[in-house]
Length: 357
Length: 280
Ligand SMILES: Nc1ncnc2c1ncn2[C@@H]1O[C@H](COP(=O)(O)OP(=O)(O)OP(=O)(O)O)[C@@H](O)[C@H]1O
Ligand SMILES: [Mg+2]
Image (cartoon, rainbow over all chains, first blue to last red; front, side, top):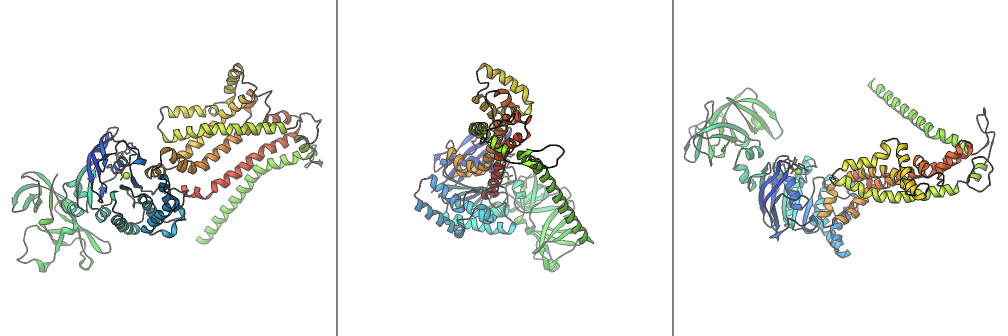
């Protein structure tokens, strides 16, 4: 049973605030992902938690024990690095056994625990190999096993999949999710890959410039981005700028500079405010001629020109233009449209978040 | 057509490689052959291409098996052991300074770190003679001139240049994550150093020690100023005999070369050792 608490952590490099007053609580058994662009402070946060960096101010607690001034080797935190950091002069077995030896456990106990852990990452047969004799994915799993064999209170992973190829990365996402479920260890996971975060996280924390932009369940963040930064970071989002001109039931009306009126959901916006509408490809519906009947609302129906179409395998990716705005859309390959065609599209107002600029 | 061009290109590269190989062999073994010939030449007068008569007399004399009356001929056995002893002490002392110094330079932001580094480089950055002349002055005042400890100190100073340089480069090449990983599984800083850092640095440290060893064995200028006339190392005997007796000089030169060659082979072997491949 372990939880992790960061309270008002501040870390500056010169004038740059790498972590800017960060408050974070991770519950027992939870997997929290820090998601953000390069340089937003993810690694700095992990290094602060693990004790390799001292924060300028703020405190860190594990199970209500203050660990801010405790050296890394006595924090009970397991680490997995982006480049695995396996010790090249030790076999897989020795890599896992090292930490147990530091705890002065008896030999047969060490043997038992290493074997058991290698089983959970499915590498039983590789215990006598050296790291360089393993594939990237296998090295990754050894690194994970090495961190877990000590049954740490907290597990920290810094972009553990970024060195793997796309196929293996996808497989390992599920593998990590499974291992996390089995071990139930409280985990902080760092990535800049949105899909990866969506697959494995109980909770996602979006960071920008050392600050939390939004946190919540993957689907909540995706569907209700709190601001433009989050919306642009999650999904292939296009933006339309405008001004709030009124409200109609649960909908907010936005008028663009060039005269479009769009309905959407504005949670915290006021009349007259400059806003952006976040349009995701999956919320852009192509309306085929038979569909245009009385039943369909006439709001949010637009004629757009296809500016570019790209066949990407399972779907066709389009860039559509209306007046000065470009948006992205997708359709099934079976009804592929071509450049220059004009199409009717419907923007579902329930799925058009309106965000402050 | 394309294929022929490619084959030609390959052929050209192979030819070039062979020529380069032969050339470098000539560079290395040319002088060696001449040395070897000289060392066994009982009589070799101009303009003969090969010695008129050969024998191991000079080897016997040099190794002290046979008494010699030739000018400049001394038994080199005492000099050899003196050189060996000085080299061993130099390596041990220099490396016990170079390892912590190199580690500190590699891992910590030391104030004036660069300055300290230059201090180590000094003896080789400038012409050595003025430095050694000054050193002789100081050593004479404190009674170290002409003594073995004095010579050892000079050798350590010269050896530290390579020692600190190679050692710090070695430590710098070890990814810090390997050490952090060890800390995170509960190893203290000291344990991490001995169980992770040191084994990973071993090949580099060994190479560094070999460099210091060979430098000491071959060191001439400093020993000349500080050691003579009382401390006579192997290179000193080479100097004193080379003017008079080519055969003798050749024997000494070969003896001086042997440890270097042996160590070079050792380094080769160690650098090929398996786990080094995993470090890259
Ligand atoms: N040792 C350092 N000295 C100075 N600035 C640093 C140092 N380490 C990090 N920074 C700065 O702190 C900020 C956060 O860096 P950090 O490494 O935490 O980013 P990150 O989110 O892990 O990025 P990435 O996704 O590229 O790994 C960056 O602006 C970076 O330039
Ligand atoms: Mg990082």
